[in-house]
Length: 438
Image 1 (cartoon, rainbow, N blue to C red):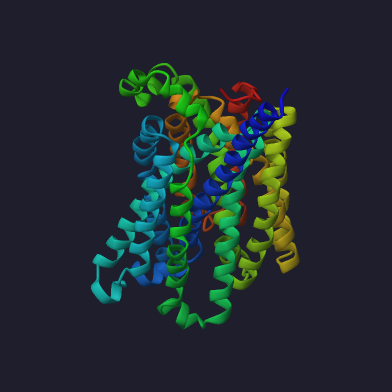
Image 2: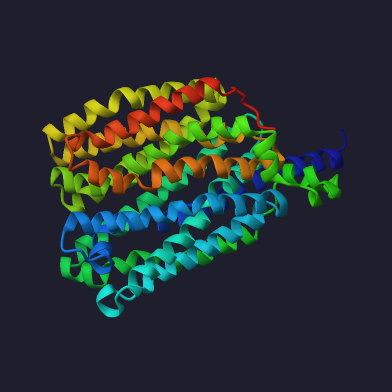
């Protein structure tokens, strides 16, 4: 081989590797920004409730606030269809750019909304409009971002690359917990209630240009370009949604059933937990956020480890093991926290929760992507994930706030996640075990 040929070979090999790393960075930053904006609502739901959903009773106010949180999820299937189809027709890059702009618009509405005391019923309506925009955006985010990462990843590393999707969500939780800790530590309770709760939303807007710049500078995935560049006429006649409900209906059902645990574990054990431990066990806001900060740091690392392990032993085996461990461990861990409500126990229990969740969600994007082929991947993933998330994730905080007042008491989250784990294990048993993604 001549030096010229050798150098050309090196360049051709280096370029995809460079593009893949850039794709991970860009998709992760954008995804982290999206979920930071989403998560911060849950972390400050108590203050939003008092400002926008007054009811004279703390529990009623919080349930109303979480119902508004859940409303954003009702619109997610619509976002999954519209943005998922858009990603499968116009490309992953175009869809990712659009989702982050819509999310930023929703966050802006919440950040600047006048309170109920200022304008009455119009105040919660503005919050609901912001949540609808956020939910619509999030509906297309997972499918588009996961497809983007999987299709940029080198062979044999698709699980590791796709795991960055959920690792970036953990990073967003870390940022959210850090901001929440700073706000609750530096401001008085009255200051937080009056204006301090808006600070995290405003900060979310400040980093939006970074995500926008990264996504505008991306290359489209080579797999997607090859699919339609060779047959331009196929792109014009492409109908992803129709094909999902005809040819790939069984895949959609399996993917939705599996995603039940993906949704429930994240929204119950990670996002809702800081609010839950304050109400159920008497922890302060600062203690809850310190625990969230530490546990989400471990979750980010564990997601990458789980994705890498799945590249070695297969998605199905990895998911079966981690889902079973989660099912068996969640009840005794919550019982321990109930009987020993100390900060040390909280950090330990929440860290265990986040590591177990990472074992599922770190593998979930690559596993779900393997159910659907390239030309309908974003639509299929977006629908499967968002149908289950709408049912089992979005209204979980409101449902668990109410269930906590029943005979289930402190164990309500454990039973909720256990049911989701049973459903997911049946779906996992029916899934294939491909390590390569078409």
